[in-house]
Image (cartoon, rainbow, N blue to C red; front, side, top):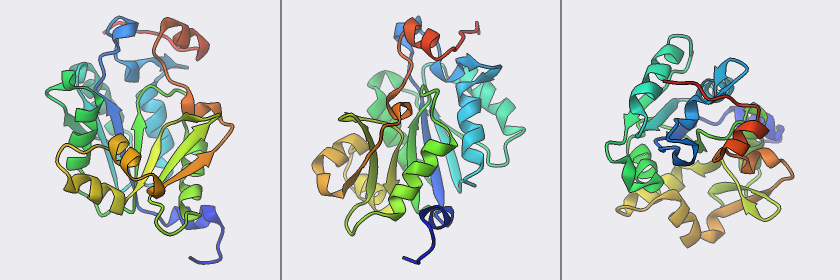
Length: 218
């Protein structure tokens, strides 16, 4: 490691991004949570804009239950994004989030240093939170390959994984990130933080109201 600041070191990392957007949104009346709006922008657009400043070497989004409308939104966004989204369709989203995670990992093509695994329904996650994770990564000790945000004892998202950790996950059939973390706790560096953004997501109509979001018809 050099003597430069964590942020300066973090800028040298080749970042890949895996965004999970295959869910049904059943508790919201089967609405695509990635397309919830705030201030005229979808959550997908807001997250994608935040990612651009990190110059990702790869940015993939796994779609599923609402693939058609989400992929239409991605097509619109890609016309303006310097670092566009590559779509990975999960044709069996009913198998759950783990199937989308595994599919996303198997679809990675780039020579990345770290992978950000993010959810599409976290309205408060932006550039500052992603920078926090990257800064924590460059401070890690030997053997620590994963940065897990923790707020008051609650596991948060997004989570940051080294290339080595992802390679190890892929060596085991059907292995996914959460199971790997549970099986290799010494590789997990806990980032204790008071930022509630890491544990805020949208599951209910009350969550929509809290985060000042709106549902649109598709």
